[in-house]
Length: 243
Image (cartoon, rainbow, N blue to C red; front, side, top):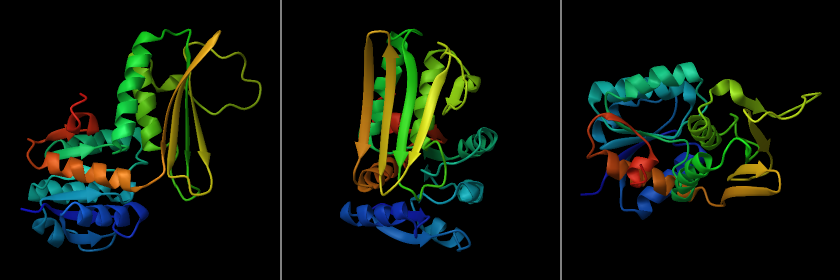
């Protein structure tokens, strides 16, 4: 039986990409809605909701999904740390895949970044560089935020170690800081580079996306997976068996 999905954020670029991918993958779109539309009715008809809307709409969707016991795939970014903590507690009541990036290649990048962070010591300076199209509203990207989380976790650092760009007389770089640089321009779908720079050598792990369809197909793969899972918050590492 074809999976029935609801697309929240249907008028956006990712919403259109998910609709196209769903058709190609033989799924049925029972609703394509945006902020202000009736979500409850099509949500009741779907097997899973796929969300690429606004961070302002996440709680509303999760409240309805919890009430109706519907699995959700969340790809929306831009939440503050405090917001996300509350939303994660809500999402844990249903089967939920929440990822900043649904690309298979990017999720391999996450795994490689964790491995490199564990092997390379503090004498390797870690920096994350991301670039997206001029229309993106949040920074850093959800993918970059996850890469930073991985590096901080492996190096036993907290968010105070982050340096969002640098300006002025900053002094010499310390071994306990992690840089993040967000570039915006043109129609770039998404570029991410993790750099480990030491005296005498530099390692760079890079992923470049050229087609938004990779994220849509990954999100739908997550939807296929999550409908058979118990309540809890998962990410694409779980979906792909990389966890």
